[in-house]
Image 1 (cartoon, rainbow, N blue to C red):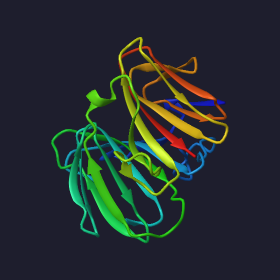
Image 2 (cartoon, one colour):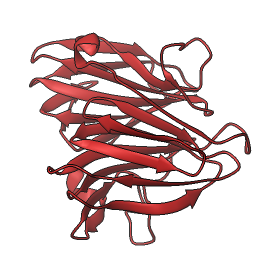
Image 3 (cartoon, rainbow, N blue to C red):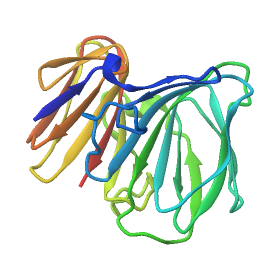
Image 4 (cartoon, one colour):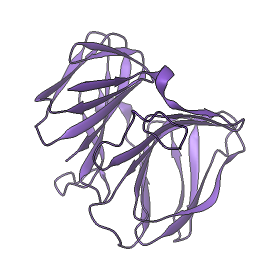
Length: 232
């Protein structure tokens, strides 16, 4: 079953320094139809103005994966984590028993990123943060696992959720498939261009929630980049 969440129907708003779109209901005035998908509770498409960002604040018992689309995000946290993650790359933070952090756009151009929040498989644990590059050339025509709670995904950033975050780039006319199962759920967002997901046209910025699909087939109408979260 596919649930097509149109960009125009997403919650969010324009706060001056922040332009946000919420694929899942993140605030009381969000779209009530956009409920969590298993452990996946937040997928925000954020644009942050230069010289601004989220000031130091706290989280606990949440896995937060940030996929940078444009610009770069500068991270600093209360357990010594500090770094800069550029477009195409990924950072992941396990809040565990508690962490405070800030995410800022120290550059001169807008920062755009997906912020993906997943509930951990169990609460607690030592908080940590990490980042690493994922060259888009490595994702050409194939899925690459970017962050994962599965032990076999050794090259991915580790998270403590029963989930994986994958990315792929496709040229117009290319297609890509992914086996699913009755117990696996997924959510896919095209970063640019348009795609067909199991035959349904999906524009950049839309989202597709998937449940009880035996196979996921993504066909590129335009040159595109897609991000997929699988929840087990």
